[in-house]
Length: 137
Image (cartoon, rainbow, N blue to C red):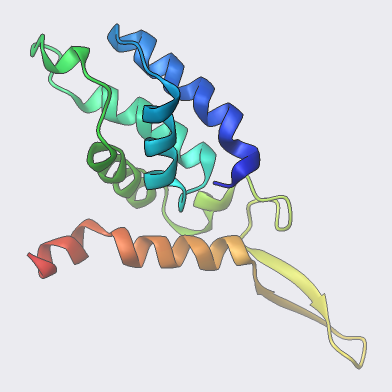
């Protein structure tokens, strides 16, 4: 996420807080934004929804809490694992979700290359893969 995403991120945080029946202030929103800034906004929004859905709905206390950044990161890992391949780049305007962009060589021939969004997705998966976390622990 970048600074331009701050307003939409704030709206999502207020929505999540409303769902769990809590108030949230700008300081808390800023803290979440800072901790989750390395992820794309659409992925973070999906992860908030996923984290809420994955909770034990019979736990009354847990149902009144905003998901932690750790819960969000686990949800992001699960979403990326499910989406797989270049499909995780669907929102990219450069490659239109294919993960590849067309370029032109000096001699005029056309060449396909990986889009930055695909490379970023691959790096995120490497860094946040649940398998990697098991190896570290």
